[in-house]
Amino acid sequence: MIVTLAGHVDHGKTSIVRALTGVDTDRLAEEKRRGLTIDLGFAYTELGGRRVGFVDVPGHHRFVHNMVAGVTGRQYALLVVAADDGVMPQSREHLAILRLLGLTGGVVALTKIDRVPSKRIDEVRDQIHSLTAGTFLAGGETIALSCETGTGIDDLRSHLDHAASKSPPHADDRPFRLAVDRAFTVRGSGVVVTGTVVSGATKVGDRLVLASSGNAIRVRGVHVQDEPSAEAAVGDRAAVNITGPGVDDIRRGDWLLDPSMREPAVRFVVRLSVLDDFPRSLKHDAPVHLYHATSHTQGRVLLIESAPIEPGGTAITDLACQEPLHVKVGDRVVLRDHDLGCTLGGGQVIDLVAPNHRRRSAERRARLAAASPDDHAATLDQLSRLVPVRATEFARHWNLKPRRLDETVQHLNLTVIDGHLLHPDVVGKATDVIREQLADHHRLHPDSPGLTADEICSGNGAARHVQRLSLASLVEAGSLRFENGRYADPKHRAAIPPDVTRLFENVQTLLDSTQPPSLGDLAKHLRKPFPVFEREMRALTAFDLAIRVSDTRYFLPNRLVELAKLAGRLNAQAPFTVRQFRDASGVGRNIVIEVLEYFDGRGYTQRVGNTRRVVGDVSQIATTQG
Image 1 (cartoon, rainbow, N blue to C red):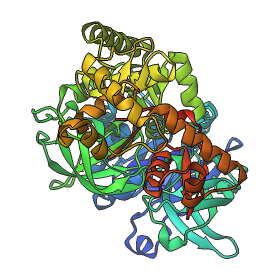
Image 2 (cartoon, rainbow, N blue to C red):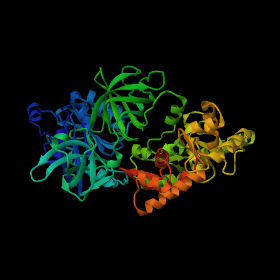
Image 3 (cartoon, rainbow, N blue to C red):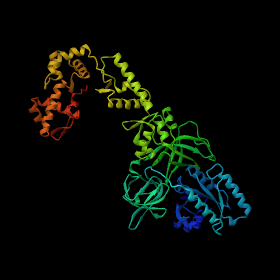
Image 4 (cartoon, rainbow, N blue to C red):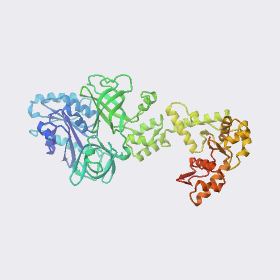
């Protein structure tokens, strides 16, 4: 269990840690000179045979950024209030931050009781009761103590021992994430990074990345709660000995991550709650200080609804950051007002998909309304009914291992098309629309080879995307035919119009050769204007009557297949040159080059220097293209 201390400056947080552990967490010379905590301090002790860690945070308002860096949602809160001062501004602000970051358990320490009469202790108890009302500390224990006399220290130790015994081991099968709060070198070991494990686990030999740069990292050793360990798991205070980047490449606010989970974000969506006592409404484009784990940057609140958020209110908003953060859905952030220097609120990340346009569109509002940041399965179920969900992106945004996502996909019975997840009801509706459109088209236009994707797909962006994916799935399953950029029922064969039939009868004999004439020569022979003849000839490809090999040459399909088979026979001996193909075919050089370049474009042959080799199948050649 990790205990995070919080409270106003000079209320005795560091003294409590020293009384419980014997460790003075004020390690900096300036801290000792000024007599106040500036940076995070850490100490560990055994309580009832359990290893318990303490995070001592600064209480001065100027160091709130360091205070936030010491808090994660799985920690146990120890709110400290001094009997002589009573509840002070940072008592309120620190408790608000603990609430915003999702802590659910804790205790209050009423310190310095040796300095005040018993009546004052009762008064401050009443203040604490009012302060904690409606919070996770409401109705909890308040332990009166003095670090000078030792009164109440055993009671606090006993309380924490009991809380640690009730703290269940954290099970977490998500990819590893550690929020870095310090980096230093140890002689003989190299670079050591410390922080709190936010998710997953790591062990010696694991390969990770540094979030800020993407540099590869290998884990050389692990300490948990200041002791050697086989692994560091979610909720642990860990020191990880790494190889890769130097100590100067790592700073507070960085992360150690599973390589597949790295995706810096400068814009994301939160469900933002403004504190009850914030002195004004929160307006669009308000500048803020933004805190996420050990990271801190400046940014702006971009409202989605037009009305400002009043104190005590909650709304879904975009956050735009000056520097990238490594957030995941479900993470919590804290916002402080840029001008007033106080905490205004915070919230939970619900989406990382940045809008490409129309930030306030109905389509986007529906997407955000579907988000349940603590339940990826419920969110995926709802999202897959609205838009195709890219599987790898969803897993990365939610910090999910592929196996976990696959289990969810199977449980929800989702359809997977080209890496996208879709609800089967959505696919079914799209498929019905496609089949109906094609059936109507074939009935009304029997001479048409089919419809293009643009002609079939309609509706908003999400609907068109679903329809395009459904088209690809139907083609792959053999339920639709796709040729020359058009989709059709597999049984449909376009009726050849009379004018196309007449044209083919006029040119068939002339094209029936491995060396057919050019379009220009054909036009002269048939005494037709070239521009008109060129347009007419394109109709032959739509009905599989001829193949357009180049801008100036058409082949009959069987003649082109004949040349493709010849290339295959040459390739059986060795890669062949243009000259070898020309000599074997008896075709002129210019036509040979046109044919071979067509084969290259269809993926049948591949040019390597001055030679070619066959890499495809002859069936690729007979498919026409206009």
